[in-house]
Length: 120
Length: 110
Image 1: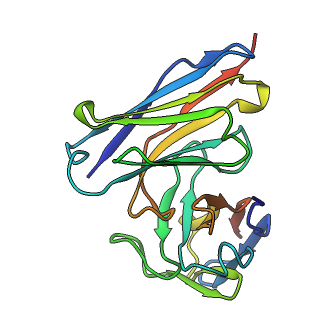
Image 2 (image 1 turned 90 degrees about the vertical axis):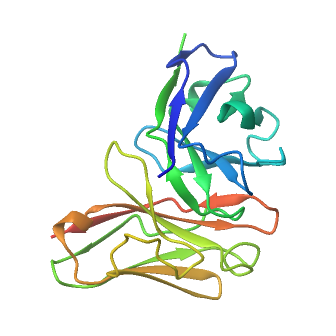
C-alpha cells in the first residue's frame, strides 16, 4: 500500500512562498504511469483541488491558483513538491498530497495532511 | 471553474438509505464519467469510496453505490450505520483537464 507523507513549515508569513514536500514510500513511484495531486482544505471548509502532475512532468493547475502554483516530481527520490507564492491568510489550510489512479481525478491514496498557517 | 453543488447536510436513521447529489455542468459531470466520491472523518484525510461514477475500490463496503445522470452524480448509502456519519465530497474531471470538487455534505445518522 502506497504511503504519502507531507512535510514543510507550519507557519508562513504573508507575501512569502509556501513550500511543501510529499514523500512517497513503498517504491512504486518510478514505474508505469502515475499521477499525483495536491489538495487543500481551509479550517472548517471543503476540499479544493490545487493541481495534478504526471510522472512525465506535465502539470494541470486550478485556474484560480495557476499564477502562483508550481508542482514538481522527482522520481529518483520519490518526492513531490508544491510551491505557492505570494501567500495570504486565505491560503491557510491543511495541505494534502495524493496519488491518482488515473489522470482523471480519482484520488486513491492520501497523505495525512499538514496544516500551514499564513500569519505574521 | 465553479464548484460542484452538493447539499450542505443530509440525515437518516440507522438501516435507512440516503442519497447525496452532486450537480455540475456539461463541461464536467455532464461530459465525463470521471466522478469520484470521498468520505472524510474529522481531522482525517478523505478516503475514496467511488470512482468513475459507479465503481467501488476494493475494501469499500457495497452499501456505497454511485450513479450519474446528465449533469448530476449521486452517492447512495444503504443500510445506514452510525459509522457512516462523516463528510462526503464529490469531484469531477473537467474538459479543461482540471478537477473540481463539490462543497461537501455532512451526513448525520440520527
